[in-house]
Length: 185
Image 1 (cartoon, helix red, strand yellow):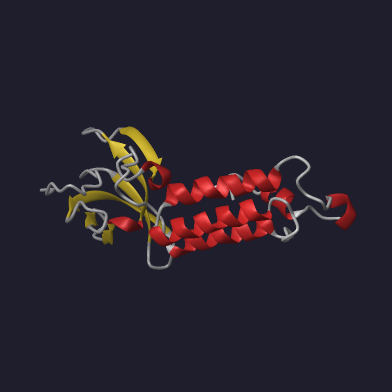
Image 2 (cartoon, one colour):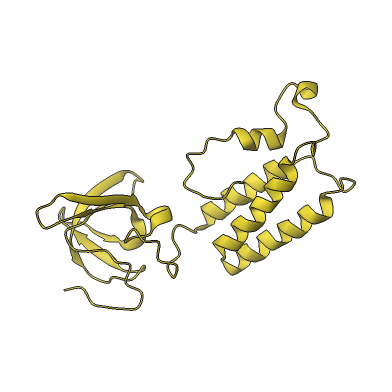
């Protein structure tokens, strides 16, 4: 029986989940028991494995006959497919590090004499504050503003033809869009 709590992530017995095992390989299994439905809880799978809910990366909802009703990735859709705003999903240190690296690449070459410098520094301070407070949306909003400033037409002094390679802002724009992180940076 699944206990009811305010932090119930919305998983259901019978659903199939995809998770990463101890060797970082993708595995799947059908939920046979929910030990704790909170984001810090655990589930038992039909394979005999008990996993922490935070290890789940994708979910498939099925009806009683086993037919697929829907399937989704946990990030950005949440464990129940509705993206519950109260549950942080995949906001670990690796994600933050990637975001800050993207910002560093994006702003490389901007110096104190650039007219955008004060605005970019203010936005980077806002990104740092959002990181400290754990506010994904605020970080992403500020990072998008940084990207808009950096990528504005005519905003870069160096061209890719002078150096023979793409400028940092052009490299950021060429990044594949398959990332699970909605941040544009």
